[in-house]
Image 1 (cartoon, rainbow, N blue to C red):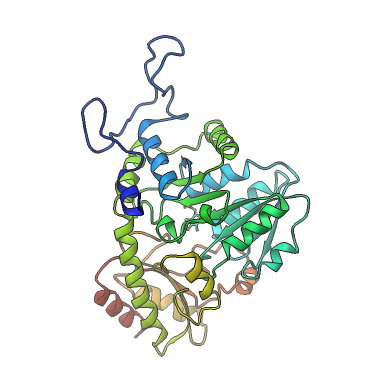
Image 2 (image 1 turned 90 degrees about the vertical axis):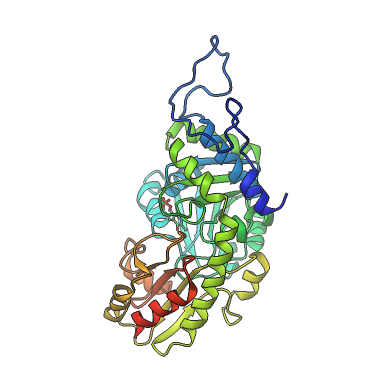
Length: 379
Ligand SMILES: *Cc1c(COP(=O)(O)O)cnc(C)c1O
């Protein structure tokens, strides 16, 4: 089956009791058993719930995996991955990373003895140099947030395999419509479902997908033991959102390209970070491993003044000033003081998150209105 068909049909079937074509919201905590141990596959909704289960199967299918697990947030999904490790294990992570991922690594899991190394993964040699016998996981986010660097997943997968480490890819920015990390050798795909998969800015959710049974067993054990599961209503909303993921992503890509090209010609704009430009340093890898370049764009202003950036984000109207990304509506943000405020300034500057950096999540509104809004905000 091709992507669009999978997105609409995988994991869902007409309700066996009523024929309802939409998966019902099984808003129940428990399930009546005919006799002890004699049940219909569901015992307690922390362990398993039919609405969540349908979504987990759908996500596994569109990521070309076999097993999916949904969590109360993207960070709860990351929490689950890290709990597969043991004290003393080392993780090599990209240095250009979602702020919340950095925070859970450094302020929660370091306390429990995990060791994190942050390296520039656009050059995979930097990863090789850090691999040792204690390396148990490599953490990749690509495109990176907010610098839109591209990391060669297949090349990192080879290093992970040789070093006996798991490769986990945060696929939030690309979505399974544009990028399939499991096909490129990743062991686990992580999502903030909150973003493009949900797509309508109305749900907080995370997910993990794998095709390896041993990993899946651990994933479900931790999901059930730690208990950060997602709710039936939210599962329903995301099932509904995913049915149009392919259509939304096509428009995000179309609008994203138009906005990137507009910004590149604007006199106040210094640099535009969008992997679709042939001048982007990692464009060749993006073209190889992605099926489109998405709707996430970052740019800096000439002079690199904090005040200028704050004025632009304030003046934009259609581009709403807000955290998050991936919804149908366009958003504008200032990473250094919003999503990435928890990263120390020198580390931010080193990875390019300078004071004038502005990040756009280009939505699926009319492109002319979006360009007019940016013209006005920059004017
Ligand atoms: C938002 C985000 C997360 C965290 O997900 P939540 O759903 O907010 O917990 C992780 N990684 C990336 C790339 C994100 O954008």
